[in-house]
Image (cartoon, rainbow, N blue to C red):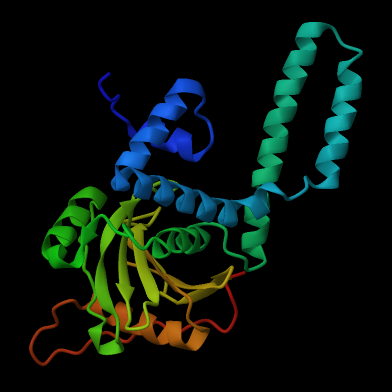
Length: 280
């Protein structure tokens, strides 16, 4: 009997324990025959573990008591209504709970806890920097092609800073999904195999007059992030460095992005200062 071709969907289902019966046996046999398939399953499981590590704490959060009380009150009143109004009330309640629950991000943001770009940058850094086999889509030996590809896909000029003077060499880059716009990512690594990433995407209000640029700092599960907005793009530099070390790298990155090719005799723009407190 001819071997059945194994697809990526098969491998992902196998890694998640969702294959049964003959199909599972076929995939197991294919994995035993081909080392590349076994490596792919290992990669999938490692990425799943990283995602669980990043998101499980959020999933485990309890709903605020006021929302639970509101739900219980609506449910009790709904039992007194006829069937179709009860469905409508339940739908309205679901929308209200969702709005209130996700609005917690806005409240956290006001207290100085980043919940948008900086948090996404930290999670994305943790996910890809831990991948030893395929952390990037385009490797450093194709740097020029990488810059052209990211420029075309993101709609803004991609400049890739040179951090060799700081002991970090380019690993490569990739395109990652953002909440609203695609995000470019380039990764660097030092001699100790410590990785940092620079991510950027078009700012939400691109083209609108911007205020004074300032570095903002956030920390997520041991990943430090310095982030800022300059012209039409938002940037985030992430890594397992202490605040002072990461700020030093961020200033070098900012200087190269602000003036990738300064004219003869010209000066590199001064990087923005870090605020004394996180944005409130």
